[in-house]
Image (cartoon, rainbow, N blue to C red):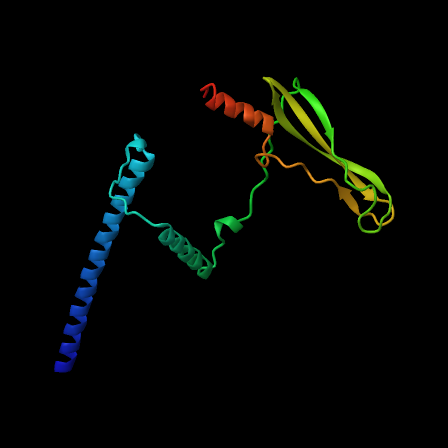
Length: 191
């Protein structure tokens, strides 16, 4: 009987210790949530430009990298799909460039007129067209890059010239337009 009483008392004291520890952890969580909300308001709220060391702990690049790797490991262990591997929605369609601008065709043919696989003759299958906005002394033109698709008459292999590189990938802006904008911004102090 004494052993049972002692066991009940030990379990009760252990339970009280765990309750105290739980309350302390909950208080710490509340404090951290409060700090997080305060930092978010300072960073993203009104007058966010005035944030200067609002109790923020500095994080080195190595610590940040380690934290990201740890989060990825935990996500993989939990069976979650990382955001980068998540399936994407439907692609965004860009608006067409204005029709009143002058169009300058630029035909880009493949280097060889023979099939690289079998050496057979190529037959035009279709074309891919992309438009780039260019500026020539404040005259805007659109250069239309036309790349015909050709199909081999013997082995049905499809051949097409590679697309020309652009200063900014998937952008309408050509090199001359970017040069014009930069010169306006830095030489003429225009916004």
